[in-house]
Length: 113
Length: 122
Image (tube, rainbow over all chains, first blue to last red; front, side, top):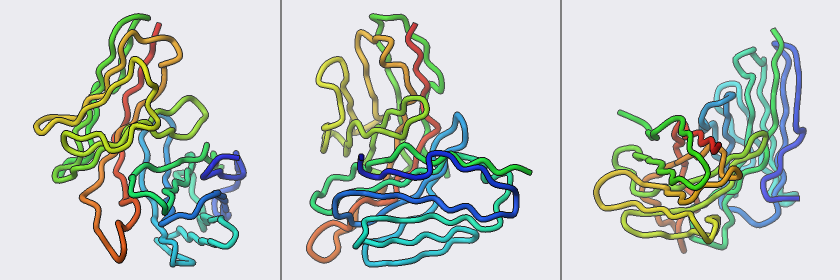
């Protein structure tokens, strides 16, 4: 599997429910970022979690990072129809000064009203 | 306080023509990244530039593709002799100067993405 791989590939829930998406990666990282992309649009940065952090919150978003398992999760609580989008995690390996990010193929979230 | 701007938003080219995609980073940002996204896929890194320098072009195809970020003006991604397989969305992102912390750089900075250019090759 590739670096920054999200699962599930697709998730469909009812408004008000929580949505959990996972991201796994292979190499050591400095930090991991989650982005949202609405259909046909650019990416919107949601949250950055550093390798020495375990959990971070931003509004209805909660991100966890487990460096021992090389995985992260994004939890969206009390989902809304407007949360319908694709969600990507992005990682940059820690053994380089390069700035490139490696993205997974994303989780497509559908929130039904 | 404009974000990253890309133009054109949509570009149609015939096979063999040249495509020029422009990216103006957030004001004050000196790092630019280009990514390509095929339908139903994530973004694939192409190239990372600072002003007048290519830092990492490991994701760029060896032929037909080039990128620049001149001292003045936007960053340009140029695709020569386009083929149908070049059809994709091309996203540009920018980030501020990377901070040095501890023994080295603090990894990637938050990248701010533009709306993308959707290239269609007929």
